[in-house]
Length: 190
Image (cartoon, rainbow, N blue to C red; front, side, top):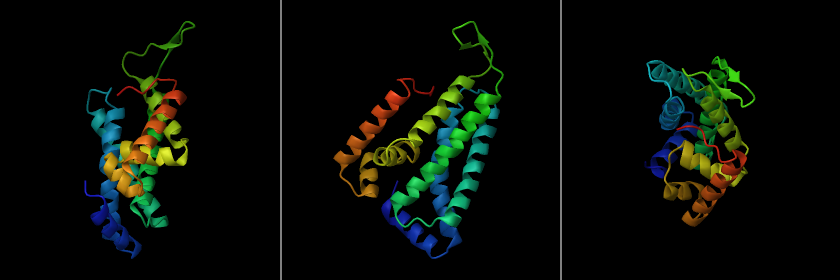
């Protein structure tokens, strides 16, 4: 992914009020949102997965349009942060909505779900995951957003953030350790 030159041009055009640049920025963000939604919904084995993924992308598209109408990011770091935040919010909303709407019963004192048709507990775990990412300290969250939500490589993230590769690696490790502790080592099903 070429991050700086083409993104810089889109950001400048967007600042100048070019609506086609806004569309270009949105397209950059939506593909990663689609991939994350598909991963979150991987437990569904029918066409609902495709529909649900498209619903997520549609919601993300609306959010990105609204956000870019209000906020004009001037740097690639600001844009990627905005895109990651919108993606995280849409995915968290979806996980809570779908996870809580599934009929799940619990048996005994062990509170184990007995619904064999779906995995709402996985979606609720994803909702908690996105919430915990949101609550990370700024620098580790910013790095996590670029690598996880936006799919940048570590060298690309270093360029976007204007820091060394070593700093990105350190922040990435810190973010993952904080998330592991906050999630008590229980990562959502992938």
